[in-house]
Length: 319
Image 1 (cartoon, rainbow, N blue to C red):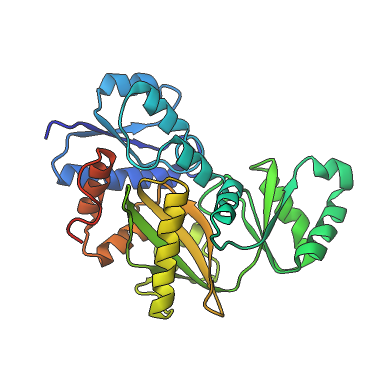
Image 2 (cartoon, rainbow, N blue to C red):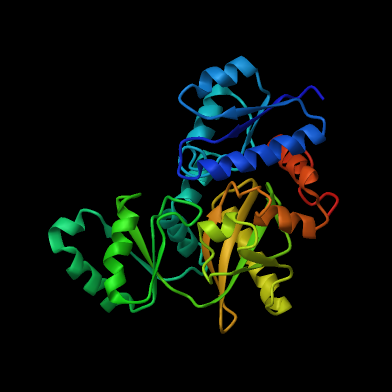
């Protein structure tokens, strides 16, 4: 094969280590498929590296800021190099959980109630006053998030009012605005969506963490979480989740592969939590497991993502 692929990995975000693992897995799959490929650690010399390697396509194995937020996508657009996954705008919107939720609400898609707290409010009202106001308006429990981080970085589950201030301070370490979201108790389900203009949802996965929280450790430590396929929710609820996932994927203009995370509450109502435009592709990651349940082994999934980047075969071919 003459197509030379550069696996862009690593980067400068807090998710660098996970990205390196994703990149290594993708690189090995490409070699197994016979593609000429090279690993490129994304740093300040990325443009010269790309030019030196003379790649024909970039496989984006980056997570977090500067990789999943439209920044590297914009650079590749300028360089005229095709790349895997969503474009600049979709990547930027999906990376920002606040923008994502606003888009979901505009499209009439279900997402938990939320309010925003700006870092500048600390000096105006004081943190105890802010915490009291949030608890009064939203009730407890709550989830406080840093809206532009992935892999649950900067997230806190708040069960008591006194936990709000440290939760906000943690979020402010990463972003100038904290997203305070209603906690929805239920089953955590994720839907991987594959395609471009006519995307499809792969088999759903229910996530069960050993600690009860699907945090960074649970996501990337073998044995800390279980992936249950199919999830333990009624089949008609599964169909609804798949439909909502595809609608969310289209609403943000995603392409290639993305993952939509849900909570299905005790009454069976699904709520969209967020979208991930470059899902993890490590040994413990969700999207490869979903693809495998659909009969697509990891090297074939990688190749499908490449074909979608080149606007070739439809995602549903062979499924």
